[in-house]
Image (cartoon, rainbow, N blue to C red; front, side):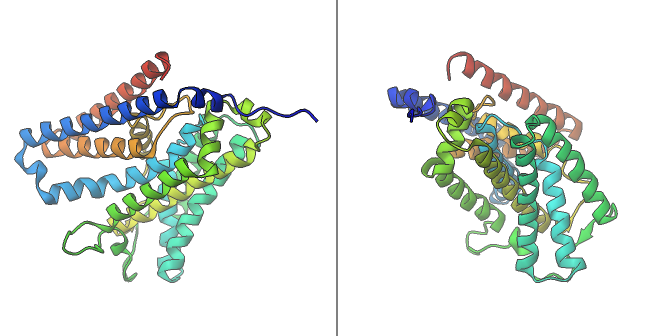
Length: 335
């Protein structure tokens, strides 16, 4: 029997591991430097920017984008994309509300149900991309529209408030460390960052994620079931989407069925700003967290400077364009 070869990416990484590590560290350093520059600029423009209440507000608003970005980092490293993040998050929050408010199920069951429903949406995305061979852009665009419609249908187009559900808002607004006054949503973000970093850097899931993104054909030839692992990766991303939906609902104390569009773009931008390549094969969880913080600081800074909402949208769009172009330049230089 002929012995199969390992994916092409592996020998390349072994040949020059220090160069790749240094390049990733440089990208993370540049992203972190950009974050510091942004914070310095906004703190000079408005002294209230660096107050503890505003900083916690930034972290709280970053939590949802950050959780979405952590999950989709795995998908983008494989060379895929997920446009259903925002509306999928909304649908997960609506499902959570139905379980807790309408059906009156226990808190833990409702929260777990919302997370599992997010994972189900991710599984469907993975099945469509991996088994049916639908391009990720089209498959997740369709899921985006389906989730948007289902959220409106299930909720009756009206917000569902978590009145009479004790402890639900504490998931996001409460604090396990009262003296520090750091919202639980931020702690959830940091905990998920640690989990995602271990999954990506220390497990077979992470190794296969990078291998698929580096050379999917070679990975398949080496005997790895690429279809199965793609489904697992999209399902994992969906679980993160479900968690983001629960955290957002707890923060707002309601499930808002019309909310969600636009979150996917900010999450994808955070991933790319953090150094993950849209072509796949390269990325890091720490970089994604830094990218999410940059997006959170940017949006908060524009608001605190009283920049009109329409111009905030323009600036965010420009940042996304710059992030994608920077990724193109990195690829052109072999990064």
